[in-house]
Length: 443
Image (cartoon, rainbow, N blue to C red; front, side, top):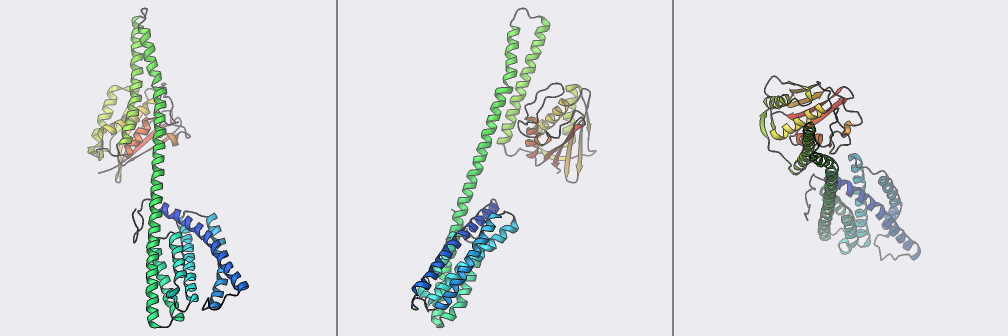
C-alpha cells in the first residue's frame, strides 16, 4: 500500500475518490454530532443533579460555558449536515463548500478537546488525554488531503500555544507543554495520512475491480453477439450451399441450371467469407491497441483505391474522385485504411441506385485532412443515425438490391479511424444521400 504522506493521489481517479470521501466525511459529521450532543447532555445532567466537585475541574465556569456552546452548536451542525447530504452534488463548488464545512467541524472538535485539557488541571501536559482523543477521532474518522491535514496541525498548534499562557505561566512548563502538543500533533498527522492512504488504496482497488467486471461483462456480451451472428447469419449461406449441392447431384439438372447453381454457391460462399472476415477484423482491432503507421501521400493512395473500384465496376455506379490539388501526407496503416475506404464505398454502393454517383474527395483544413465519401442514394433515417457505428448495429438494413448486412462494417471503420488518432462523422437525410467524413491529423 502506498502511503501519501506529503502527496496527493494520482490524477486518474482522484476526483472520483474526492467525491466519495467528501460524502463519507459528511455522513460522519452527522453521526458524530449526535454522539457529541448526547455526551454533552450527559455532562450537563451530571453538573445539574450530582453537583460535580470543584476539584474535578480547575475551571468549572469556563467548562460550563463551553458545554452550553456544544449543546447549542451540535444540533445546528447536525441539521446542516442532513441538508448537505440530501443536496449532495459532485460539482466542484459544492464539493469545496462541503469540504470547508467538514474542515470547520473537525477544528471545532479538536479545539473543544484542547479546551477540556486546559479546564481539567492547571498543567495541561499531565492531562493530555482529551486533546489526544479529539485528534484521534478526527484523524481516524475523517479523510483529509495532506494540505488540509497540515493546516489542521498548524491551526491547532497555534491555538494551543496561544491559550497555554492563560493557564500555565511557568516558562519551563510552557516549553514542555508545547513539546507535548507538537508530539501529539505529529502522531495525529501520521494517523491521518495512514488512514487516508488506506482508504485511497481500497477505493482504487474496488474501482479497478468494477472496471474489470465491466470489461468482462462487455466481452461476454460481445462474445454472445458474435455467437448469435455465427449461429444465424452463417447458417443461412451454408444451408444454401448444402441445398444447392444436393440439387447438383440430381441427374436431371440442365446445363443452365448447373451454371445458376454454381453462381448461387459462389455468392453464398462470398457472403459467409465476408461475415467471417468482419468478425476476425473486429476481434483483431480489439486486441491490438495501436497500428504500425507509416507516412503516406494520400492522393496517390486514394487514386489507387478508386482505380481498382473503377476496374471492378461493382454495382454499376460511377465513382468520382476529387483530389486536394497538392500532396497531402498522413501516417496511416495502408491495409487498414484501404479496408476503411472499401467499406465506405461498399456501403455507398449498397444504398445507391444503379448508375448513381459516388463522390470521394480529399482536402485539408488547417492541420487536419478530410476524406469524404458521398452517395446520392436513399439516405439514413434520423432515428438510425445515433446507432450507425454500433457493433451489430440495430440500424443495419438491406441495400437497395437486397444486400444483407451484418452490422459490423461501419463499426470496424470507426475502430480503425480512431486508432489513426482521427474520427469519422456521418451526415444524411432520407432520399438525399449520405456523407461520411474522415478527419486525420496532417503531418
